[in-house]
Length: 103
Length: 164
Length: 278
Image 1 (cartoon, rainbow over the protein chains, first blue to last red):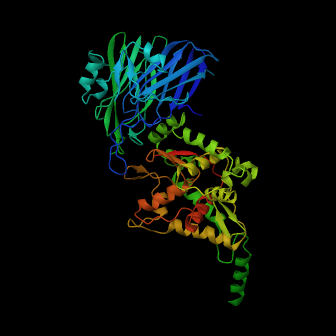
Image 2 (image 1 turned 90 degrees about the vertical axis):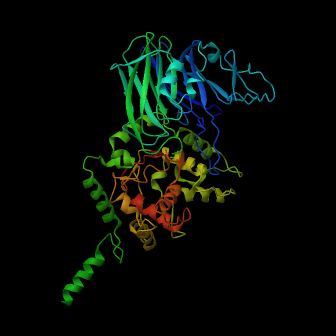
């Protein structure tokens, strides 16, 4: 799979529960490599979830979010079969977008 | 180095992943493929707040409001982190009209770890995994009806998440 | 006197589980299991496959939370892709294993009659590659970890089913593994047993030690310390280094025999791999 984003979105009565795991180094800039040089900071800054064109959750992240970051949240509305669009952009300007179906 | 113009990141190279690679080397534009969610977000990414080494400064930049502790916030974090690089921390609250939730780790090199915007219709609960450099309090701040409330828990860290 | 000696000799030789030199793996396994079950009466037998998480509540909660969407997800995906990828000659890993390699992890290591040696899953994978015109991959590397992670995943829940045939070479390999396990080594002069039999649940610096029972059931493991998935080979070599001993070559005879012994004494406990560990 080319995308870095994995999502499990489940409609649960009134709310939709969303979990996401993203493949990203989230380098803080504080860690050295074997040669003693600092590995430059490389981290996702903004992560956005949209349903029906409207943002339902926005994460602003710093360097203290773990590698291969994870977040879980829930929002009202959202039915099985609906699209959930997920996008992120990092400090290097790299980005990724993917759309998932709510189960 | 990323600079911001009208909320759009402007970099010398913009690489898209998942939709094929499009390298725009040498061009100063970033209009292609920038997630629309970012353009729609009212607030800019709080760059300065994320650079702060002091709690009060970070919170001042992020909110500029006083905080009071609340027992209506349930902060879940381990007693002793298995590894400071991945500490599962979650929060839930019964406070009403929550519009944002922030996590501050005072002993981290940059104290603000994460800031979540909660639009109307989204539940005031978040679970995430954070790095902790060493034993520290974890402070969660909940913005409810324009006021700030917090809960704190100490997490012991033996193997740090910042290379220690 | 001679009558009694002869009677004893006859009875001893007639013992069903013994080879002439008194190796009794079944008795060992029973004793091994009983030792841990008595030491930790509140731990369910199958939970020993979860190592330190079976012994420490605070750690268990962190583990359970991460298991909802585990960090090893990407390695597991890569493993599935690697496993399905054909060799240059068009054949696949599936052609080298029974049941196309799905749900077979619990049968490894195995004693190979032809070579008279123990074959581990990692070794079998590289042999498969070489038999099909591909170069072997590093035992301690990411690809081997991903492949074994996928194969372990297809066997999750199945009980370890290691066989020791009635062959003196197999019994000797088992006994070598057992001897390795209990021998002290390195500057710290620790044996595997020092940590994993004498001190499970205790802390060694910042780590909570896993019990030896079920210790390989979770292999390969995504260690927080490594920030990546690592094979049994990787763990054995780093354990040796940690007691300031000289690590052996991955898949050396001693390591293969050690894996044979440790897997056998955990027969009946479920495969829990790929696992997460601190």
